[in-house]
Image (cartoon, rainbow, N blue to C red; front, side):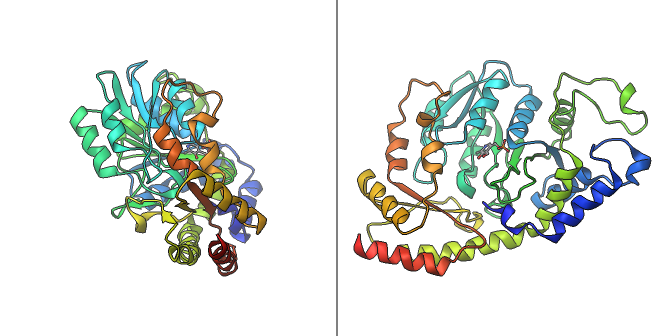
Length: 372
Ligand SMILES: Cc1ncc(COP(=O)(O)O)c(C=O)c1O
C-alpha cells in the first residue's frame, strides 16, 4: 500500500512552504500563516474526492475510528459487530468508546460474512463496523439493508481502502461515518494521520468537537475563550501532515492505476493454474489492488507455496496471519472462528507495489506453479 513509494518534489515543496511560514498548528496564528490552512485544504480536497459533505483530518486511523464511535454517542456497553479478521485498532477503538466488540466470521471475500452478521444481531446491537480489508469493499448493499432493517448505525473502517469504490461510490460514504488511515504503509500516507468523513452536519460537529477537546472552532472569537461543547481529546492533524496529504492525494489515482496494472500481470499467470482460486470481490473494479490474495486447496499447500515464494525472493504478505483475532493477544472471545481460520490458512497474499517488476515476479510465480 505504498504512498511512500512516490514521495517526491511535490511533498517536499508543500512541507517546505509550511516550515517557511512556521505554523504547524491547524488553527489560529492567522497573521503568521498568511491565510494558508493546509489541513483545511486537505479536508476540502478529500471531501471532494470521496464525495462526502464533510471531512475531518485526525492524527491516525485509530483516532478516526474512535472519533466516529464517540461522535455517534451510542449507548454505552451496546454491541458493535466487526470482523474477526482486522487490524487490532478496530477492536480497540470499540472498547475504548465504552462499547462491546462482537466479532463475526469472514467469508472468501476476506471481509465480514453477511450470514454471521445476521446471526449475531440482537437487541443490544447498536452498530456494524465493517472493515474493507486489503483495499476491497464489503457487501455494502447488504450491510446497509441490515442497518435499515434493524436500525443500526454503520461506521466504515476504510483504513486499508482509501480510494476504493463499491458500485461506483467511494467506500467510507455509505455509513454514518467513514474512517481512513494515512499511516506509513497506506496507499496515501502522511506518515501518521487519518480522516473521518460524513454527510451529516450534526455528526460532523460531534466529531470536530470530540477530536479537539470540545472546541467549536469559532471564527469570531479566539481559541482561548471558546466554550467547550463536549468531552473530547486531542486527535488533531498537524499542518505538516495536511501538506503531505495534499501532495499525496494528487497522486492517488495514478498509484491505484499502477497497482491495477501490476496486479493484473500477476493474476493472469496464476489464473492458468486450476489449483489456485482467487479472493472473491464484491466489486472487483472498485478495489485499489493493493494486494493479490488467492487460495490454495489446503493449509499445507498454502504454506508450501509461501515457502517457495520466499525461496525465490518473493515475500508473501503477512496480513493474513497477524490480522486474525487469534493472533492478537489482547483480544478475548469465546468463539474460535474456525470457518475464518480455515479460509485464512489457505490464503496467500502478495503485496502490490507501484515500483515492482511485475513481469519478472510473474515469471517466477509461473515457474513455482509449474513445479508445484
Ligand atoms: C483495518 C485498519 N483499521 C485501523 C487501522 C489503524 O490505522 P492507524 O495505523 O493509522 O492508526 C489500520 C492500520 O493499519 C487498519 O489496517
